[in-house]
Amino acid sequence: MTQRIIPILSPNFIAASKVDTAPDWAAIFGNSNPLALEIGCGTGHFVVQQAVRQPQINFIAIDIYNKGCLKTCAKIDAAGLSNVRVLRVEARWLLASGLQPESLSAVYINCPDPWPKKRHRRRRLVNRDFLETLAHYLKPGGDLYFSTDFDDYAEDVAGQIHDLAGYRNMLSSAWTKVLPGYPLSKYMQRFLERGQDIYFLHYQRDRTVPRRALPTPVVQRGFRVRWPIAEND
Picture 1 (cartoon, rainbow, N blue to C red):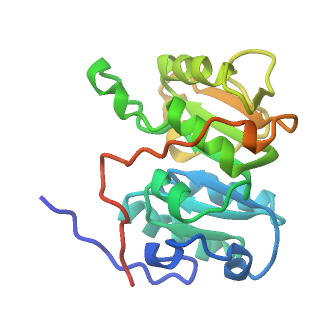
Picture 2: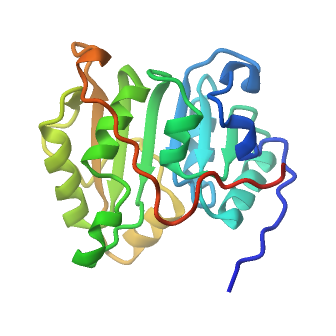
């Protein structure tokens, strides 16, 4: 059954058609502050906390679900935040169409769908191709945070990023179960209440590796949705 799309009227929501040619994000936010991206914002718990803590950063929060974007916008509006914009788009589409290389100071990916069955693991968002592509969009020294409640997903991502050019591990181990000061999303809190561990990875875009030395990005098309998701045009 097709899910009914609820119109999102928040001034902090941007239709996909408005960002299909790598727009001027400084003009959209009204300032030239550094730009950060949360991939899979859910219902907005994480990005609202982070935006309050870092008012000097402009946040793009994306999700493929209409209701999640609606709830995220409601939280942003209620908090009176001016440094967050929400888009209902697929992450790989945004990288291919809506961002310039080396434009992101940070990327946050919190508990994406783990696709636990072995036959489905090729559907996981964070894989080698995605990580190689993402490196082109992080500024030198930009941060990549990844979290998951599945230990094998953490192992998979840690194993793939470890030997990729352009990344530097900021932890003393492959991952950690405690990352002080890192806001918890609604889903993280739920997992922890159930006694499940959260595995955090923190990497930076290596300043010593120029973008021209990185592997050519291969942007995979998302399997869940067709590109782009357009609404409220």
